[in-house]
Image 1 (cartoon, one colour):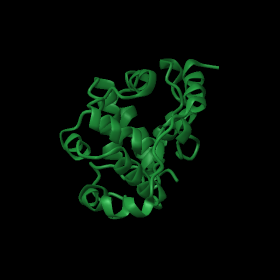
Image 2: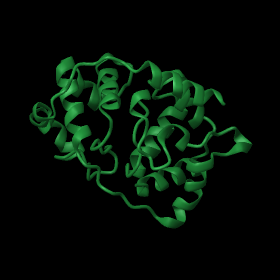
Image 3: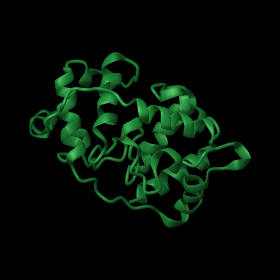
Length: 199
């Protein structure tokens, strides 16, 4: 069993306690989020992530990280700053309860991305994405590993490059930074395209 798999199991086993969220309360609080992330959490702008169907645990962690400064983004830091723990729990409950839209991918561009997602790249010691994010991209909520299926390719490319370049560092045990550091731009773009059409 490799180190990534062991870390995933440990993180999943540990879990975490968080405030119970109310999806109905979150719906009202999410009005301000809708300009970027869509009324139901399905963003129509590829630079902003879709949040619909994402796990409560992952959304909560990201909002807490924006609030604390563990994850940096000029827009999201300001948006998260005034949120209480209950606000975060309610927003997470709302977005996680929404149905994620089905994305689409360019089949030619996605073909090499599917190989990386499903098998990794042994020559680089690059683990398969599905080891943590699941064969259908549903993620691992207990370990706070996000669902990826249907996410905009543009957003996924940015996220992977931010991990690779050290602009984003809120990943558990530096796992995503370690993975992204082994990826070329072409590999990042291919796997992002595949993820966009995954469902």
